[in-house]
Amino acid sequence: MDIISLGQYELVYNAFSFAIAVMGAATVFFFLGRSQVSPAYRTALTITGLVTLIAMYHYVRIFGSWEASFTVVAGQVKSTGVKFNDAYRYVDWLLTVPLLLIELILVMRLSPAETMAKGTKLGLLAAIMVILGYPGEISGDAGTRWLWWSLAMIPFLIIVYDLFFGLKKSIDSQPASARGLISTARWVTVISWCFYPVVFVFPMIGFTGGAATTAVQVGYTIADIVAKAMFGVLIYMIAVRKSEAEAHA
Image 1 (cartoon, rainbow, N blue to C red):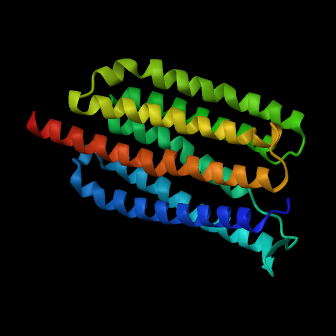
Image 2: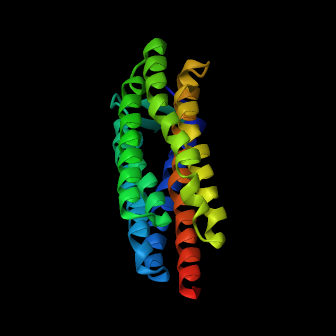
């Protein structure tokens, strides 16, 4: 683990702490919010809450691993010799990234056949994307990192294409009051997910030592908050709008 400055240590420390608070608050909000939507959308909100609950758990583990890897002595950060466990992130993503796409499919309330087909396809692609990224993440060789980054981008691009073109007809059929929010949720998914491959390449484009460690950990944390908690709020708002539209109809 690269030696980092006190400021870098505290920045990452506070970012992890903030993520735990955000994910915990979001989980409570989504589970309590189930009562505000019609039964057809409660499964989507349950999955939304599970996503942030899983993320909160893993951020607690990441936070603990960060504390165990460093000690502060007289204002200096020293390595304890305990390796920081980055695998927690990938375990989290392997569980939550497919669920993020599934909750979007569920809140759209497509036909059972289309829900199954789209959910299975996008969920599997998301899992493959995460699995392909891990060997590069743990490698210190730039060539190896670029290879696995390139492979992981293949399912990523397929997902992006499907979100913008495969779901276009389905989005057009949604109630007018929710259509804009669904389109926004699609954009938030794509833009927030673009953070991850960009953060991944930080060590390959000039970030070194403690700066690379700090940029990667803070970058991934910001991306997680946007992709899970903020995206979940959009899912909740879509469910509320659709529930109201269907009640009026």
